Length: 158
Image 1: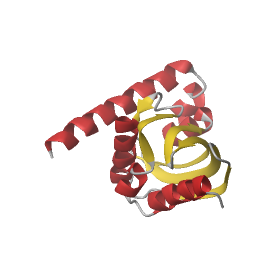
Image 2: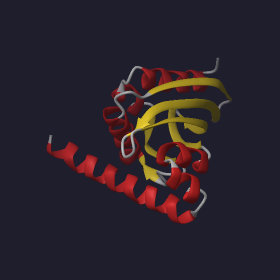
Image 3: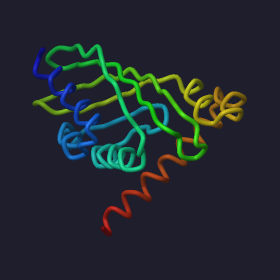
Image 4: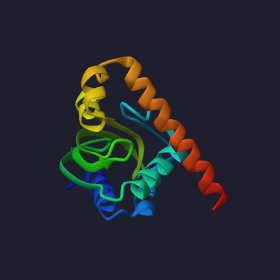
């Protein structure tokens, strides 16, 4: 296993153990993150996103596999199992991740998943009807980013 593959393995083991600091330490200060919901996050935001998701996802568990890469790029697959708090629905989100790594730190992290499949699980009938629309994706993304901003603001005061 290469050093970069080991970094990503460490990242996901830290995630499984809900070790927020260890996850955050995997990112460079200039890191970026994007997925279908959280787009174009900077390093501070992505570090806070993981803290928020772990702290709010009481029943969340993850599994990971197929970590492979080279001197710069690593890919992995991971599955998240959790209850979507807004509806109480169980979600199994299957994600393909790609990472750019420089000097032993993640500089770019992109997660890909099928938003429509996620929306059907998380939102039920609404997701079935509207999960394929840009309208719903934008609404979910705006709400998620608002939650992140609120979390970051409250973390400053604690």
